[in-house]
Image (spheres, rainbow, N blue to C red):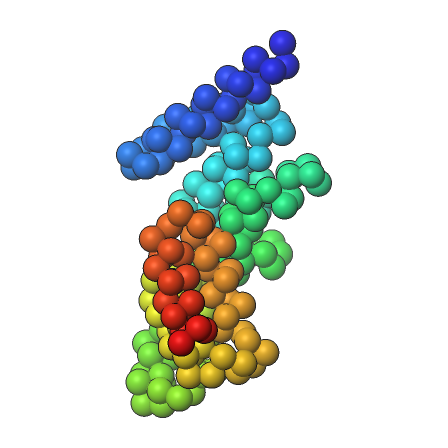
Length: 194
């Protein structure tokens, strides 16, 4: 019956997650896609497939998968995590353009210029926030977190707490189990409660 299909889809999702951990993106994508075909209500399968699309540079497909999610899945933690990751690469506002062309024009998203600005003016929290956003867009969330934590330590309330809010978006995109989120949360707590 229906529960058997949902159960089989769940088994495929678990296998896909194991494949991801083992570095087998192709196997994971295949299992997530099959699970989603079997159970269109599987938020984990939808999010997994969207995450793989995003990680392979296809932000538009990832966005389409999230947009097709039923309303009751929009707040699912896995869906929210991929949505946060998409926002980091600026995919939430894609019109008909693909971000890969833009990325080729500026391979470092202006990181070198921003880094020089921050090194020359360590107290320029706006430049530091922009640097963190550039790092996140380039997929270097660890460096982004480092700069955001520096900003929060310097001035928690700067720009309506923009650094803290962006930091939480990165944590959500990384997922609660990730080393970046766990380490970042510990460091944030030590700053806030020092």
